[in-house]
Image (cartoon, rainbow, N blue to C red):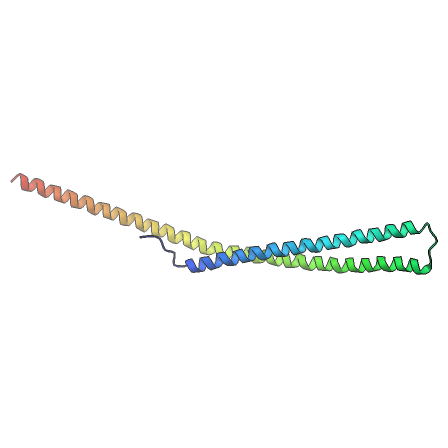
Length: 154
């Protein structure tokens, strides 16, 4: 008789939940990386705008052109601040996904431990059953052999 775990459907469900949590974490980490790259690009654009302003300072500039540079840099600063908040929020989402994966893994391990205990109990029962069968076979053979000896001598 083969081992059959009574909670196998629950274990399968917990395994699928863990896999879903793992995939969610991977998606959220990828999203966080995209957000960080966007923040880095904004920083690069800000540095380029400052470099362009520094290069233009040597030339005669109107007040409007100077204001344009300052507005561009201020806009990039505001966009960078918004992006920093977005990155921070995504980091929280990643942490939440990590906790979700840890909980799913813990739930699966609990059921797996139950399965291991049930399997060990089943294996012990199987060994006892097999030992009992062997004992019965030995008893039957010994009993038959004894009766043959008793019948042949008389």
